[in-house]
Length: 72
Image (cartoon, rainbow, N blue to C red; front, side):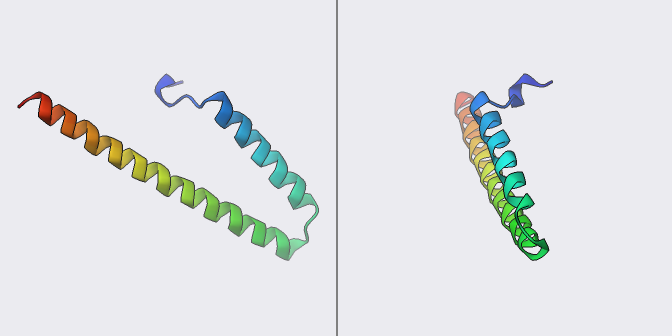
């Protein structure tokens, strides 16, 4: 496993709680409600991915500037 991308205990606990909660809720819903829940989860995941991509880009730009400044 690449330790650079190792997930924190806080993240893993939150992920497990989220999954358990969604599963518990899903069991109580009818088919139409489950579809809506899936859309909500998918939208939330997309927001998280966009935020991560944005943070990566900002970090990459900052790192590039630091390297460029080091060679001036």
